[in-house]
Length: 106
Image 1 (cartoon, rainbow, N blue to C red):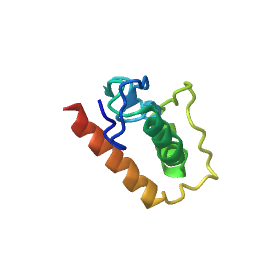
Image 2 (image 1 turned 180 degrees about the vertical axis):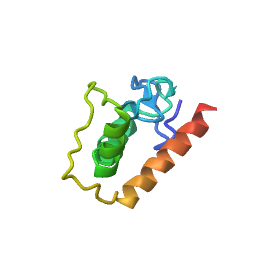
Image 3 (image 1 turned 90 degrees about the horizontal axis):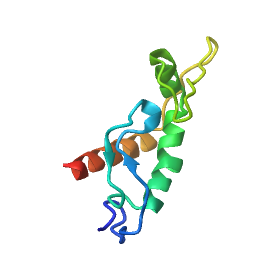
């Protein structure tokens, strides 16, 4: 099997890729190990999902809807916090990742 992102062999990969992150409440919509290699899975988690989900607007929405993180914590968002604009490059990469993974699930 080859990774849908880097096209490298991913037969030995063990990571399960969540199409939507667990931090958005997803525990069911996943891809089998090897569809996304461990290296790409770690990259997207570290460089795309983490910065996006820790941005003010996502913290505000997750706090309002009481969506816990992977560790079970609700993000804090105080009255004095302002939801700053999200980096559109990161948002675009996140949307592209989700779209490609949704197609791979079919």
